[in-house]
Length: 477
Image 1 (cartoon, rainbow, N blue to C red):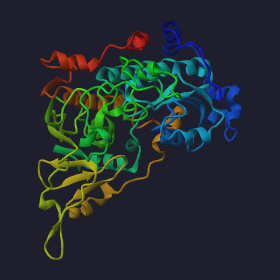
Image 2: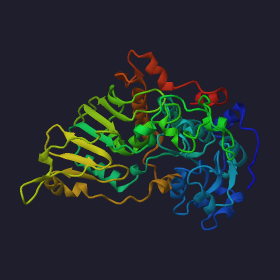
Image 3: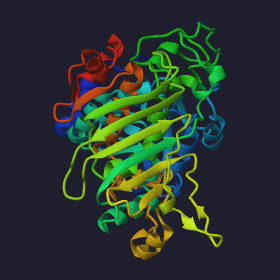
Image 4: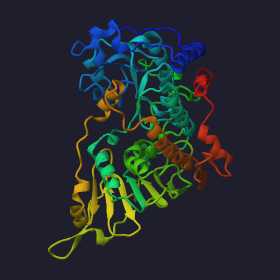
């Protein structure tokens, strides 16, 4: 299929479209236009959403099928910088072979904006903000893969943009729309999570940069750009251009401070999302690196242990220490009193698994153990769990994470992880990433949203200055 080629949107065009979205100029939703009615004949135009998919391979191999799984959404346009070399891209291209293809999301939205209701943004972290902001300014609903943004300031701007443009938003942390999430809310309502004073959170090593034999401490050398690639400048987006290396594309970018968010940004969204949201943790006041193995400012640590301090939030919500451990020695210690006594009088402790959280109450009477993504929570000792069973039974949600976004676009429900929720969670991750970069203890003022007495850390809240081509996105919200 030929690739449409035209100039990207100019700053004037972008601001004109954003002004229309802001001040109420009428855009006819694409699902009401006759031009696209033939694309999904299974449902009438008023009951389906046309998707502009920014990112088609990699994580999008699962995200796009999730969004379209019940037939209420269909891809109208695909955008990817590498339609041949991206990981796991073949499935979406084979399922929807006739969908128009673009290499620049700005061109896609210029050409097909009238036929697109919502966009999915499933691309490397450093490009999430500009793609989401562009779509929101045009009045499009937006689904963004986790973490929401690469910097603290970008998350702040997207939270403001959500209010300004009044569109449906969702971050792709799938567990937040699950029976596990509904169960955790029940447990909070029943008082089972009162007086939690310590949270252990962990993740076993799995990403490539956590393997000792693959560690690097200098920028990788330049390699020839794959013939399938449209534009390395476009892939770099607002970030300063680094010479191409296959460690960046198609997948290894997550390891690099310049482009990715490390293990905390990747898995933190699936591990601490419940405790952050439902225990109303907010932003921490202290971020203290305890152990950063092979620390350098090119890639994230091989092992990362960081302590976060959160203040009192109200009755039953005392100050909390959250201890994040990824890599070596990540599993927390669990006292025998929380185990099950066997017939031979030995004590069997629960398996902690590859990732999860362990919540400790100040009373020390029981702990709450949860895994990751949509996993249900369990209470130990199990006798306590049996006593509290009515609050622990996990209800079944009405929608999946993907279909909840689509049905929210149709006005049938609300999303569970809109930017107003996901943005602050992402900011906690951003603060941890700054600590991993600087390797110093940090004091943070949640009210002012600034570090105390550390100019270098405060500069990292905004991140590096965007390239001129992308700068206007950072002034809109």
